[in-house]
Image (cartoon, rainbow, N blue to C red; front, side, top):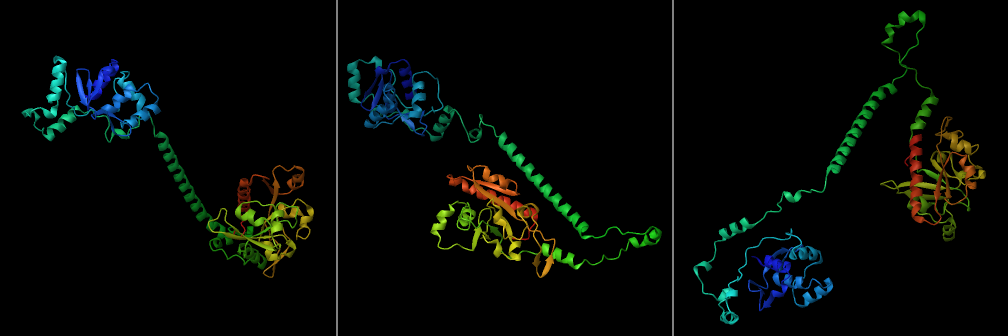
Length: 441
């Protein structure tokens, strides 16, 4: 029997009192003896095999706390049974379980078996002093010749019990990967649908191009000239040239607006946003009180350039202004958003009748564009009202009647400022795309 099985047998029978250490050996009564440094077949979860002396000390110290056991084992320079191995190892040695996954078969270790009980104590001591019982001091015989390595390997393999190999270790009996497969399949279907939709859109756009470019599909024919005009339907005369006003309207509507977009803020001190704190809010997503920035600023800027980084890979330049009376007709073409104060007097010097014309109709008075009058030119302006979320609703009643977007800020939670700025930029993007303004935003 191997050392681990003998120790388990004695532990299960509660005969650990018959296990004694004599020199460098452990003697199990008069039956077996093994060297103290013999490696047992119990492998730790850290990868090494426990020696016999460490297991004997462990099972005899099982009534101690684990910390006390560790201190004593460290003092004796023995292997320490880890806390994770403590319970399964003790259950196996006490016979509560018949086997364990941590047990591996090792080559048998030579042990002196029970011919010792036939000797008297005096003969046993004399034989031990003479060295007759020690294997290294016995005379060498033919049986002690070295064994062939191939035969030894075959013997070990015949005693091995295969538990895992490189294929079975990949199996996960308690886990299922169907969710991953279904997720991958759903993703492939979504990609296929998106590709099909893009192809259909491209095909539809190709079909619509010749229809949009064609003019006057139908030719009005008088009843009495129907027979004469039928042959001429194949060769239609070219359409009349468009008028100068139509040409100007088309060129002005498609022409790219030069210059950065303009955002107007109130020219007042009692407002949440003005030219003093607009740069930190719109560019960095951090709200700072206007009074604090006003005290630190040396002079109020007339035109405040900002660079939009939120939602853009390359920064886009904007201009923040608070004097609408100083804007020219070309400057008004670049106005894309207005932060309103909620007061009627804010629109006093504006080229509009009232706030209804600004935000509801988005219609401006006639401008001089490239020295021509564009009577049907529309300017899209996004109205935004900035407020603290805990303010009363009385201040919002007037603004709610206008066609403006209300964005709320927190007075104390500054980490929520970026959410409000993202909301503003998203609304501005959607507004400009809906109007198809030829401006870089």
